[in-house]
Length: 312
Image (cartoon, rainbow, N blue to C red; front, side, top):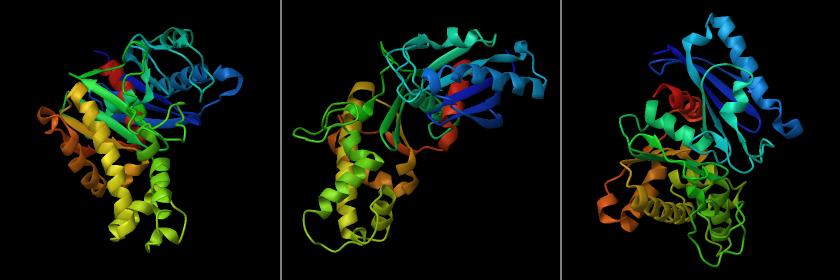
């Protein structure tokens, strides 16, 4: 087996890259800007140029490299075809491995960035040792990645794992970023938690430290840790939505473990105390034993998972 692999995580602002050995050890990591001008036509050439430079720096030949794994913010099917538009990059549907092959002659595999991050957590992170897992990323939105029997679940158009857009609330008047209403993301993302907080604070005048400054997801959970009663109510509403949503997911894929990551997860273990009881309340009996853990790889999950696409 070849000794090395590159993991690439393409974001709207930066591209993260990592060099790994065959055992999954991260040997080097770096970033380059994501140049989205002209429908992102420079992104893949820039990636190839950066990897080629790193190979020259490390004295690696193409024969030493098992391949390049790449995660992108869009729906990518199992063959590496971007299906539809990757809005943050300016890309429309195209074959990612074939396109990158024009610039560098090593095997390429591509997948959705959230799915890739999930793969990374299974390979070397919070879900190491498990073969059936769901990764949940609580950030500005809610992303998800599903692994079944050690394999990424991408679906026919690469949209498998879009758990943030489960419909949970009828009668929601505000529109989600996807164009629908009442999605999980609207209540459990960082921005969703702020929405819950504002709604709760508007219900009465009950004292809360949240009335004294900027409302953020971090501020809510800091107030929870300090024993703020209103903040605890907000966290309970958040936990009810997320627990219910993950119970729905569990009834379909029956994971051994849920890995919770993203900026909101920085609240720590206290976050799970609001999610787990609600999950167990709503889950199908044979699914209730799923474990909950926090993600461990942070911003590196994408490069780990991308490398795993070619090393596992």
